Length: 175
Image (cartoon, rainbow, N blue to C red):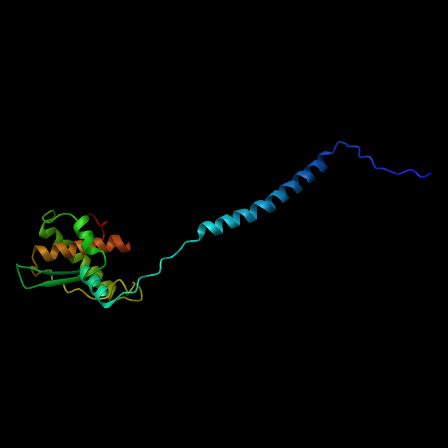
């Protein structure tokens, strides 16, 4: 008669090197399951829906340009300044210092520095972004443009420097 052989498992104590190998294998197995999960989580969290831009009609485009255009006619003289900049009107109304906060002399001195640096940048399109500095500004320091024009021009330069992170003078633009 044949006897069925059965294997009996006798647990034995593992050596330190065997324990280390087992630990490393378990560690790699866990890492193999965690890494794909983390990658999937990152990919899902980085997805963002993008609103498609609304098509602009001629009427809507004209309204946007009108809202962002500042035309300053000074009652004191015949000069005019036209500023076409998105957001400037809202910034001027909400953030800029009120009229009469600065003296006309202060704004004239700052405007002279800002205009000089602006015109230098207009003339150097290879060094400065020509999309930011498109047109030259004619500003004569010996001409009296009045308070309103100096106020709007000064505040436009402050807005421009803060918005586009530019520096047009030796001092930090302040509000």
